[in-house]
Image (cartoon, rainbow, N blue to C red; front, side):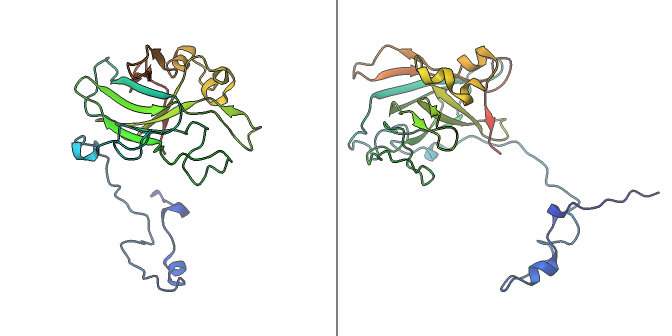
Length: 235
């Protein structure tokens, strides 16, 4: 007996329903009454990435315009390298970062906490890794902040990372934490990583301060393999 395929309701929307929407023009190829039988196949992402994607000042989160006033807070530099599963540096990876300001406030409508915004704090940036897989950006140390509705536990200071690279089908997201923070020990997100070595890999290594008295933090990222950095995949 021939197999019968019953289309899932989410595959298509009935044309009769769409015809009820005023001003909506039904198009046969856009709203078929049967599921599409041929799915567009995956192809690798690339090539990576035009240098024009990175603008002057994109590597500086603590300054809105290059040469302009600096944000309040403890100045930091964050640098590191991006590696593949064989320990080879990944050249031309797109690294994007975003974080809260000195008071733990994000410049985002979802952040409704009463802490002040800093008009000189950009809070986000991007850069491409060089031939040795290195990245570098300047910022200020972010503050901790409460999570209203979640027993008001405080998130420790952290910086969000997003990585795109050749062979990576969707961006990889992780967070960098700071050493010596008491809130690290009780943070449900950080401590949700059961593997102790993997959890420790998310805590940056503090180096000696720069001549400009900026704290130096090193944070290396491994894209895959036995020493892979813990990621949450962007849906």
